[in-house]
Length: 532
Image (cartoon, rainbow, N blue to C red; front, side):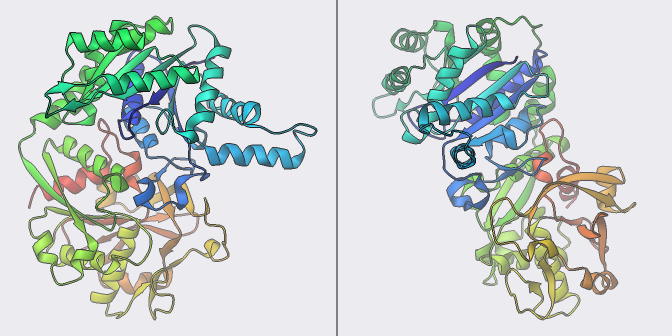
């Protein structure tokens, strides 16, 4: 039976519970333990697949095709854990399961209630992750903040679960804010005290408090938090702002968090330094001097979390090339008014991410044209590939008005169209082409040179596809179809013959990139940009 670490948060959201959980996972893996992680989200949606990025941020797709919270991206980037649909538990999933059981008659004769039925379902879902695999530790992050009405069933479930598991099998870690009041020149511990007080009222007593702060905490401040929150002094762990999130495991290591957790869980493991992570990731990031400028042209640019995995994958590509990355964020709507050169003239690479809907599409097409004509390295992802096809069809093949049927159902030249199996789909949730699919690469192409193998597996999230009726027309004008899904002869990767590096893919390579294992497409994209 694995041991459990329950991670909660207080005072405000966006404190970095996901990063903290991922960093703890990294630390414990370095000590030789096998780790898995779970994110519990309190919203009633079954998954975030139908949410606007402005509401939720990025939707992270797992290998098994689950649309999940973006924190699962942090978990997979920091650790070796392979996550799937069971690693993201939502209120929607829990209620859907309980109501389905009630309708089947599983609770026949009983009144279905929050306690015990909802809480039991949450506990079963948490324990399900360990079924069929040997795990030493499961880290369970509870979304939202203590005091939120939506989170109460999850908090009650982990309270019960800790009692059931018994001593040495579960601990509670609370992430909280210790603000610095600039006008007073003081660090305040009262918000943390109130947060821990609220948690204790629910029946959960934290074993460790991680204090998010922009200032280094004095010994007196740490002692005060320990005294008023009833934890050991060594269990007050500062989490001071750092330049890169990949420093967090190193900072936790300095504070002895891994040794503390192992002691609380009564585990004995060899102590190992994070030297490889420190040298191959953090040191390279902080010491690189040569700069590369990459323009990301998207429609959700104003929200940092909308393209989280893409930004991180670019960072990983920069690490591989030992360069300093500067991301120039460009709203695609700004490019539709003959201002493309002003926004993109200094870019050493142009990336167009995925998305849905017509807004901003013409600006993306303009960015593709600018990249193609000026020989600037280009990487298109999902919708980025589709806009690249649209631009090439219009401006090189002379198919004026060429478009996707998503944006113009009556277009004369539907170079991008709805997948055949999607044409009768009425339910929106979890019905796209999702998860891992195989792709066969053509030798000698940029894609093959990046991956260095014939067959790859990448993750997808889309409904629309390249229309094979136009393959021959585009091929004659210089477009290469360098990656094909053999199962249905679907185009997965396109390239341009007369361009230094123009690669666009229907899948999302950003989901499989790690700081210590950069994705080959991002690595080679940045490598080519450095030559400009």
